[in-house]
Amino acid sequence: MIRTFNPALYRRPRSVPVLVLVDMQQEYEVAGRPLALTGIAPALANCRLALGHARESGIQVAYVRWIGAPLFQAGTRFARWIEGFEPHGCDMIFDRDRPSCYASPAFADAMERGCPPLVIAGFAGEAACLATAVDGFHRGQEVTFLADASASHGLEGIAASDIHRTVSAVMRAFGDVTDTQSWISGSAPFRPTTAASSQTHAND
Image 1 (cartoon, rainbow, N blue to C red):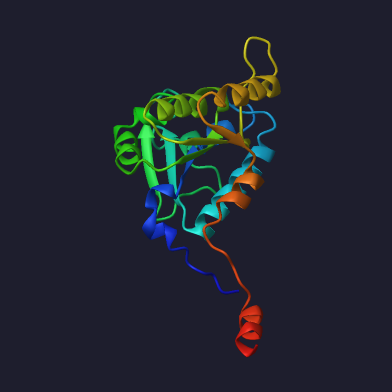
Image 2 (cartoon, rainbow, N blue to C red):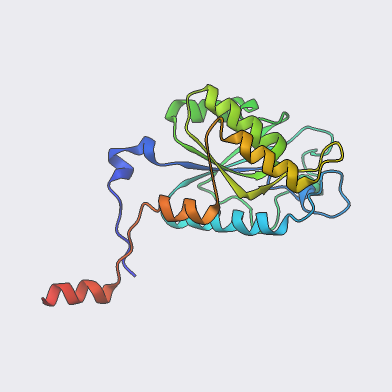
């Protein structure tokens, strides 16, 4: 398969989004941990799809993680990346100790300088993802939340699924809310063509 480069990456660099993966840390995945999310598997599967699409398409990936809060002490097991979500050398990594990704001065500076559209996935929906979307909106950035690539905790006797559905609805006041497959279909900057097809046209 021949992958055709999209010149919009040069002409309109601010149209190219950044995939922001929020708190892909073992604390949220390991059963029995204080912040473990029940039913996290489908959200993780969609995070993997989003990440794979970003890597294939040349979309920048920003990892943002909790470091310094009581449950996220640097070097401890549960502050480490979930298996399969370890950053690559070309990825951006930001640390912060409050819910919003913008609590990291380095993240805030990088996003505000380039002002790319943000595509948010990760954990947890009712805290870090929502706080980041609100902060991004107030900074004039376009925000998209991949609702099925995130999950929320239950709160005050309200089921986690109900909280997440409500969070996703609230997010619409600050940005777009979509599912992972729809985002992938609508954001691919490359238009693959098969070598066979190219050869056929060449012989016409």
